[in-house]
Image (cartoon, rainbow, N blue to C red):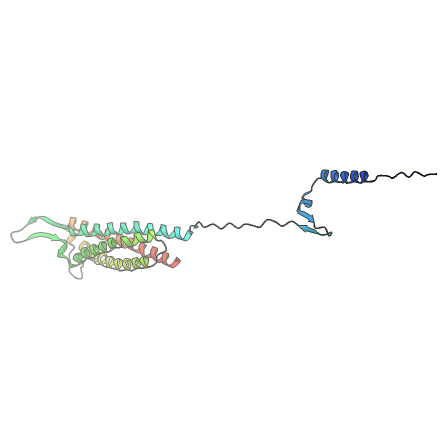
Length: 234
């Protein structure tokens, strides 16, 4: 009597189970956490390396606000310098052409007055003319300060020139102003008469020249203060 033994084939079932596991793994949604981590086969997870940070370095020069202020001060210096030149030239020209001849005369005298009859007025014309020359020669240094705002040597030279020029103009204007005052008012103690009662046009033109010279001195004072502040803030 023979007993028939039927062998069960389990291999197809195993493949079916494996196929179902693959389908489940493929159909499962991949979360961001699962994408960032991977298993190394030993029960440990390895975090995915973060991308390296990139630092962008700009090679473009950033304009300095101090440089803009210095350039503006240099431009203002150039404009004030032109104003001082105009005032000094005007003062010297007006005084240098000043004269008056009275319409009456005698057989022996002619009433004539001119600027070079007074030594103070001669000094006035010379000083304002020299100041104008110095200021004109300083214009290239002022342009250098505009082009190169951080330069120190040129600005220091301008301060020295402006101080010397201001002292010269102020001395000439003050001396001429004293003579004009005496010409208008005279001096009873010194027995000096006021000549402006006769030479009205001469005294009027002289006063205008003195005012123009003081205006040039004011321009120079502003130039000195501006250059000094620029040097201090540098």
